[in-house]
Image 1: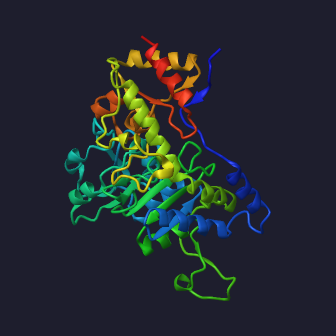
Image 2: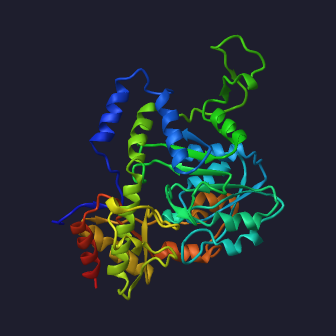
Image 3: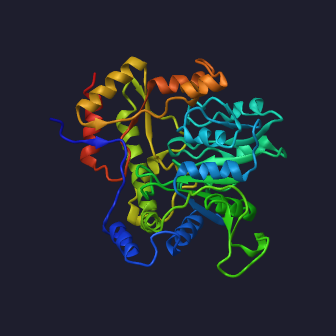
Length: 395
C-alpha cells in the first residue's frame, strides 16, 4: 500500500474559512448580498484594478468578456492551443471564429513572436493564457497590436497574484479573468472574476451576468420607483453567491502565503530533479530560488517577477516514458495530471474548423510528454521528498 495519497492539486480550507461561511449562512443574505461587492473590492485592490466583476465560474466570466468586447459572428479571436477548453469555447458562444498560435517552448504560453503573422483584418480579440501561473507578457502583445482595434482578454485563471516587472496580471489587458475552482490559489467551490479598468466594460459585464437586467437610472427608459428594473439586453444568470464570496474573502487573505509556499515547492523540484537525464524541468526565466534564504514571516515584498505556480509541468523524453512514469506515480499514491490535450485536436474543433495533427507542433509535442506534478501549499516536506524519491526510483 502506498505511503501517501497525493493529488496534483487541492484546496486549503481552515477554520477561518469555515466560520466565514457559517456567519454568512446566519446572515440575511445567501446571494446578491454585501459579501459579493466586498470580495470584488478586495480582489480589485489586491491587483491594482479599478473594477472587479464576480461570476459563477471562470467560464461564465470568459463568456462575459467575449460578449462585452462586441466581437461578432465571423470575426476572429486568437488564443493558445494549450489551455482548458473554456478559453476558446467562450468565444464560440458568441459566434466568433477561433484561431490558435503555437506555444513558446520555454514558458508554454502563446508564442508572442509568432503572433503578428496570425493577425488579420478580422481579428478582434487576443486571449493569451498565463499557463501554469507564468504571467504572459501582455506588454509585448500590446506592442504588437499597436493601434489596431483588438481587445486583450487575459486568461489568468492559473496566475492570480503573479507579477511581471512589478505589474499585476490585470495591468495592460482590457479584461483579465480569474478562476476560483478548488485547485486554484483562491477557492470558492466554483467562481470566477473579471478585472478591468474600463467603466463601460464593467457595466456590460455586470448586466450580462444578471440576465441583461439593470436598475441603473442612467440606462432605464423610464423609472417607476426604487424597485424598478429593465432587461436591456439578453444576458445570463451567471451570478456568484454570498456564501462563495465569504469563503473567497478569507481565502484571499492567505494568497501571499500560498504564493510563497508554491515557489518553495518549485524551488525544491528544480533542485532535486534538474540532474535527471530522462526528464526536463521547466525552463522559466523567473527563478524561484529567491525563497531560499527567507521565511514568509520575514518577507518584505515579492520579487518584481513572480511566477504563481498553479502547476509544475515536467516533460519526459518520450510519450512512452511519460505514460510509464504516470502509472508508476499512480501505483505509489501520487496522482499527477496532464495539462492539456491541445484544443485544436479535440473532435469538435477538428470537425468544425478543420484543424489537424501537425498544425501546432510545439503544443503537440508538449502534450505528448508533459506531466504536472503535485503543486499545492499543503504539501509538506516529507511528501515532497516522497514524490521526488518515487521519481528517482523509477529508473
